[in-house]
Length: 84
Image 1 (cartoon, rainbow, N blue to C red):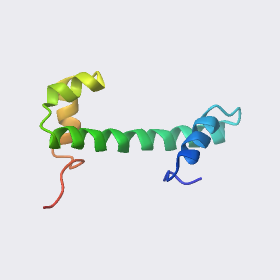
Image 2 (image 1 turned 45 degrees about the vertical axis):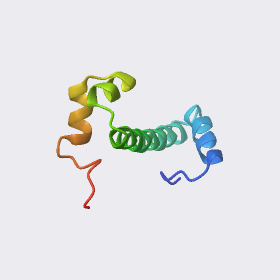
Image 3 (image 1 turned 90 degrees about the vertical axis):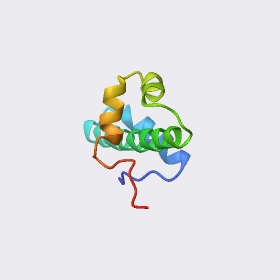
Image 4 (image 1 turned 180 degrees about the vertical axis):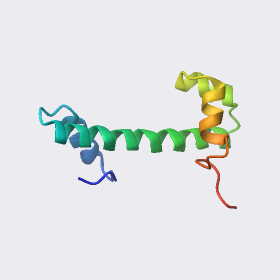
């Protein structure tokens, strides 16, 4: 099973697989869903920053501290940084 999700049906299948009684199937699906969520979060944080949102506003929506979201996305890890 690939960790790349390219259709809604793939996502629905992963959600279904995450509830599987087979731990191998369930754990692979959970890992793929976690990867998807991480990518979506990074995308939306970048979107918010491009629209002028503060780190505090983003943190509030994600229910984390401002420091946590700033460290994750602006603290030199490069998740939002691009060579321009």
